[in-house]
Image (cartoon, rainbow, N blue to C red; front, side, top):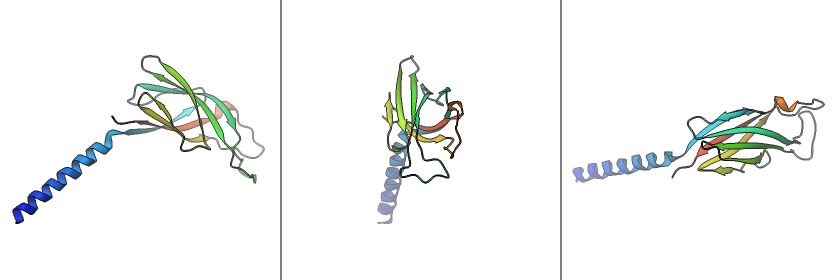
Length: 136
């Protein structure tokens, strides 16, 4: 009976270990890209550029607003072969993702956050994004 329990326990451990190995099929990288910058995503076949600040209507600190507002960023993604595509992501839609050749791009944040009566030059903006390689 003990031998059967040991065999069953070892089998259960093997199943759990195999399941843990299969769930790591996705890899995620967070990067920060400055306005006008083009950045290769570590250990991937893509590069991403922060092309344009389309809108920044986020409610400035020090101001009472009815809505939180939104920042919209246009990016360009380039595959290793030169194939490229532009897309936009918004801070107001945190669940929004852009899919490209097995990669998923999500906007995490946009800096700097607006302050009351302070104008920020577009060159001073940066976007924090996550890039996830989807498993097969």
